[in-house]
Amino acid sequence: MLAINTDYMNSHGNPEPRLRQIADAGFSKIHWCHHFGSDYIYSDDEIDQITRWLRSYQLTVNDLHASSGETNHYYAANEDIRLAGLELVKNRIHMANRLDTDVIVLHLSAQPDEADKNVAFWEAVRRSMDILIPYARERNIRIAFENLLSNHATLQKILATYDPLDVGICYDPGHGNIVGDGLDFAEAVKDRLIAFHLNDNDSSGDQHGLIFSGTVDWDRLARIIAASAYDKEFMTIELTMPQEPGNIYAGDEAGFLSHAMASGLEFHKMVADARLDSP
Picture 1 (cartoon, rainbow, N blue to C red):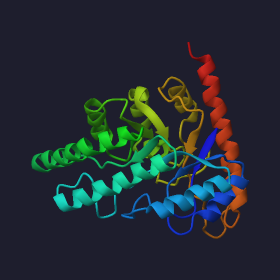
Picture 2: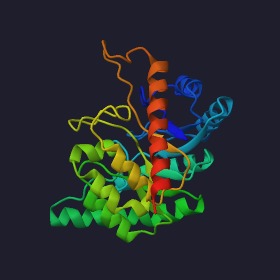
Picture 3: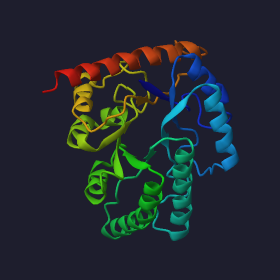
């Protein structure tokens, strides 16, 4: 019923200990999130090793967080940077296919306000998507663009441009809670919701806290999901384990994952109940 992000402690380094802890906590699916904000390219040998780890711990992949790049961006106006960023996203689509999942999550920054930069931005997006859409379609992968802190209008334009069979939305309620109108956005695009990064915060920052630990309106989100196009049994939670001294979870990885599972299952039941209540 629940998938959890592999980078709840860090996004780099050996992921195998995290996979072991995730499996020990009772999770059966993961959201591959390592190197999500870097220019790192996975080799086939590395993907083979990840496949062996997943098999060993009886884990499968619900979805994969692609990288829009640290310095290389598929939407960059500079052609060299754009092409490098394009190869980065193609690498993650290839990886998702090899790991037997059907959705990659991708960031897209807000469109620039200046007219000339806006035109260059959308031209770069179009040129990259002209390559990425058929590349992903051939591998049965859909692209889920994530709501960030200022890109709702940008995502609305993306949804109006590309087919629902190819492109949808990954909704992050933590981001939505910070900007304040996130659930209105989720409601407006509920027919295009194909992935989630479930987490909570107090609206002051992107804390990636446990579900019910902050001020997200989880009752409303459950109703939105129940009425949405999302049809997978599993939903992804995307959390950051606090590691500062004195925090209740500092040094208690197993305890953190146990609470993540419990709160996630409670929300999963809220969605199931909302589906039963839907007309």
